[in-house]
Length: 262
Image (cartoon, rainbow, N blue to C red; front, top):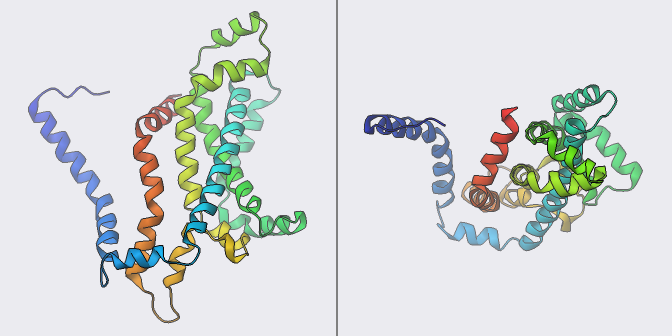
């Protein structure tokens, strides 16, 4: 980390950071201020009065929670195997997994829809949870493997000499030491799953299975939209992810930094 000591350097750094942040604050300010046009806070009240509003949040929480659990355990186990275990052709398998990062979500909609119909999962949360987890696991493994590489091999060798099996080493050594990376995974998957729009729109065909990203559609009309209410819905939708990031910011940054160093 750079050590900024002089007052002049602090002023220059503060000005630079402020200028860099402005482009990100402008759209947020525009969205919030525009959402108050017309009825003011009444626009937010209208969003809260949408039929099934609480159910929308519950559905999004179910999808995000299940996706986080699947990605968390799958990522840690995969990173452990790729980093610390002797697996034949593991580098080939690793880069085959990384190739999945090149596949955009929209390209997979047709095969995923066909698969969901054949498995009888269409209209269930699993038709959204499993694709979200599958799309996020490669990137999470890419980050986590770098973090696990930084854990000394001597710890695992000592545990093996003490009679610990592979599962014991994973659960007693890797999981506790990978907490910062786990927080980073939680935040990343929460943001992606909570903001998912296309997958829930296509696969959750029942009226009572809507998610928060579909709330703005209640204020879209045939010829024009009720823009302030649409933006109010967007603000309300973003609040949980913003709060989660602020609450976990320090651990999130530690996890990403640890995963990127290698």
